[in-house]
Length: 228
Image (cartoon, rainbow, N blue to C red; front, side, top):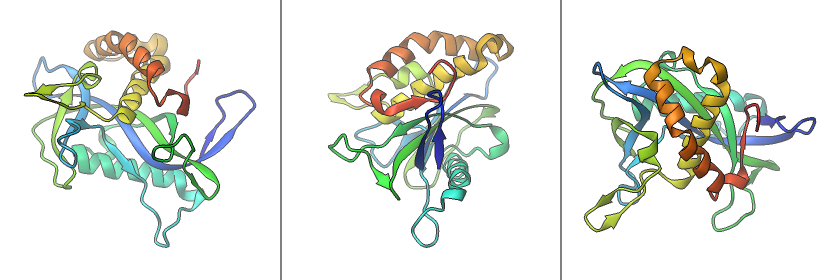
């Protein structure tokens, strides 16, 4: 269960059914640039080039979710997905919960519910200092691990006459939320992080904020950081 108390004295309760992580890192190489750690999308290669780490929280043995264990299940889900999709273990990154996206029913503005609670996608951001080499995943849904510019992920590549999105729209708002939150969280201490990462975060802010505010998912997304 996720409790949103960011709006003053009011609070709302949700049930977390999925996770998504903006993980920032860099590949092996002295001058390798910082970027978003992603994997190639094998499940929907004609629609999307990449996917951010994350996925659905697995139900417990009887098909339900225990509210008291939900937050642990979210972290366990995130850890499992990151390990499967980009081959990093918990000690190589530290995730911060920075937002939620309320999930709507397909072709509807009605929210999905479970046990009377609105289902949400939990949004995380993390940084890894591990230098990343060539990696091939074997879960059947994702392929090679890569480090890609966040700004590139907001665009659409063209291969021949076929256009496909870099990542799904719901993941784009997760990416933007992570960039916005990272600047908000670090604030004046942004100078304490690696200069290359600092430059990346600052350079991407205008595009991230513009895309975040114009996204179809914006009305359903809440950032859990100061100022939001």
